[in-house]
Length: 120
Image (tube, rainbow, N blue to C red; front, side, top):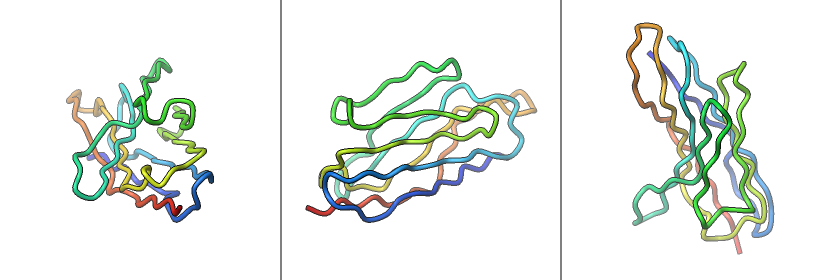
């Protein structure tokens, strides 16, 4: 199995910064891409940012220029540096990974979510 464990959420004032981390562990052969999604109350889960094993990134328009996704491939860890936070960034943030397991199977995995609250 594969587990994703997130950390780094919390309460921050508007204009502040937070860094989220997500570490993948288990029967991992390789990771094709990792990403962050978020879900605000009453809204659908949406993509925030994604990074491939080759380092290519993609961001939601709402976070471009404010958020930065990065990885430590040796640690199977993805980070989301969030700056200039706005109240509308308030949501539960979920880590996601597309993993090739040692068995050869490829599956998508989700973390348990971490709450980010931005006060005005």
